[in-house]
Image (cartoon, rainbow, N blue to C red; front, top):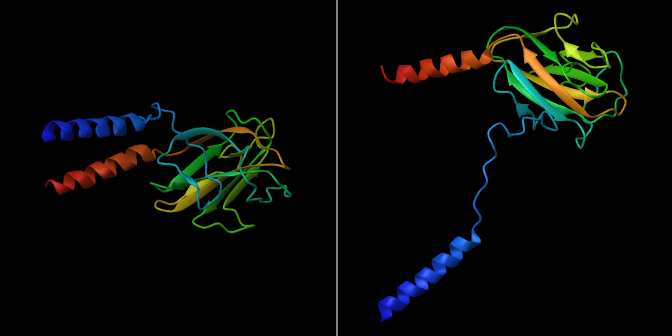
Length: 187
C-alpha cells in the first residue's frame, strides 16, 4: 500500500512539472536576425564573404559620425565586424535596397574617432553609400585583421538597409582550413 501511494504521488508531481514547462520554439531556418550590433563592442560578426544582410537602423542609438565629406549626423547606426580570411580588396555596398540617406564607414582593427579606414556618403542614386573600385574607394584588407563596418545615416536619417560585401570567398577558405586542421588530427 505504501509503494502504491508513493508511486501515485510521484506521478502527480511529475505530471505537474511536465505541464508547467512549455516547449522551446526553435527559430525557423533562415529566420535568425543577422542585423548589426549597436556599437563596435557589440558588433555582429560576419562569418564569411560574400555576405548579404538586411536590417534597420530604426531603434538604434547614434554612436558614430565621420566626415565623408559631410559631418553633423545624429542618425542611429549599426555595426558589423569581419576578420579577413585573405589579403585582397572588398566591395561593401548599401545600394541594393537601402531606403534612406546612408553613410558607410570602415575601421581597421580599432575604432579611432575622426580617422576611419574607409568612408563614403552618397555614391549611388538616392543618397546611398558604397565602398568599391567603382566608387573609387575600395576596402583593402589583410588576412587576419579585423574590420568594423558601420551603417549610418545623414542628418538624422534612419531606415531599412541592405548590405552586400563581395571581393573574396572567405566561406570556402574557412571551410578548407577547418577541414585541413581536422584531417591533420587523424594522420
